Image 1 (cartoon, rainbow, N blue to C red):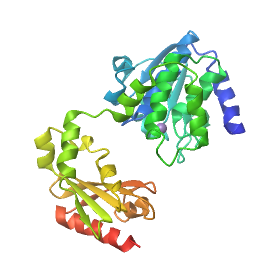
Image 2: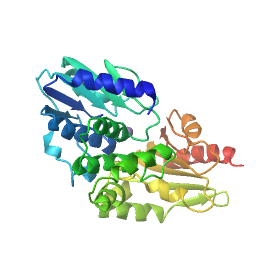
Image 3: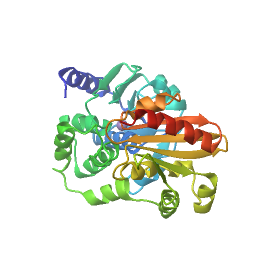
Length: 322
Ligand SMILES: [Mn+2]
């Protein structure tokens, strides 16, 4: 970790030292990384005798329920905590309504790994080279000799989720070196990998099969378009929140350079997920429609009837094919 990051860790730990009550904050629309960061930190601080609460406006991802107690997560409080610490939040709006509890605390800090982090805390430990916030939390806990197998297991969940099981482009040598430190501890690694990464609800499997079987290919199989319509959600008892991962199945097909998943919000509004394989910039494609994301994964919203929306997407894709 960079020298100034280490300095900020010392300052953060120093400022937290005398706090008896600590509030930890996850971001809204939470992912496993934010909850794993918070629960690992909570376990470590409790070992130091502190009284710790975790806050999140939204519900914990159900994939974490096998190891974390979602009923202990608070949505509100009148307490003025000695210290407030946000984890995995890139700016204060990501705390949602809980921001008022964060700001009410006597002192505060933030631990984050987002490139676009906008400072809002008195002390910020920011390491954009970490693929997950859980890795930064891991290094903080290790520096205090507070790590154990239970905490390692929680952190492993955050790392696995934010790195797509070590498959995303954010994974570096450092990610693997950090994971190696986790493997020093003995817990059921496969239980975490299955629950956080591989497990799929039957209805989500059904939705995926249904829409992928109707996937259309264009331009010699270089473009794939998956349409996910209201009738598909109704037939499988799913919602637009169950569409994650479907577009990846399409872009993984040999020969496909760009894949779109077009999900119906209503008959004239569609949520579009874009994935690209090698030479097309997904973020740039999404930006044509006011969306954004990363080079290989991006998203946008389009108004219009289904086939008009698909025509617009196909034009953008065709213009970018080599
Ligand atoms: Mn994260």
